[in-house]
Length: 309
Image (cartoon, rainbow, N blue to C red):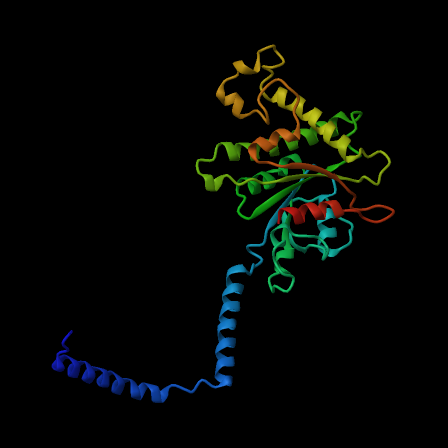
């Protein structure tokens, strides 16, 4: 049989009484758990949770996702910005500088990042807002576009706008200038990915080639716009490698420096936008029109914007 030391038992009893006596004054100040107190406590906890949620997920105008709008002069970029901002196009003039506006997606346009978010979430409306940065299309002012691409920050995508009625093979000058500009933009994105030294810097930026003015009889449909641009970029790509391919030197004989300046898949074949997927750059060609006798039609462009937000 185990013997219990009376002195230890008495000591333990005294300590228990001392602790109980010390806790008695604190208990006097504790309120009784009434229903009103319980409801207040629950509301307090919920309000703290909601406050933290708003702090973490709310978005200010400085951190809204940005879409960069670029392309040759006369393609309709500024008219598109006006339409996206005001809901209707307005007379514009040639842009001389870059400017940014805040726009809201149409209510029925789905947002990729919000597919698991409840419509009752207070941050739902914030996710439907974005910034659109318009840039001049003149050759001497395109540094606004290249600077924005080199410092992407919150850049989520690029819209390269073209005049689908100005890409006919009969108009070699307009087609050539458009293809050269698009070639340089894609090459800049490609080099930023391949030459980045850290994984954090490897930001993949999707590109939409917006074929505008499809309401015009002379405009090329979107699939033909893609085929025409790919064919012309193939020529630009060959001539940009200092004519070496045209002179009969095989692609395998070009050095590493020249290979870095080569857009898409390295080789003698034809260029295609699908080659940019190797570098994580998704290029889509979608048609529409900002103005027209039957009104504007930019739904496909809105849907593309929603798919990358």
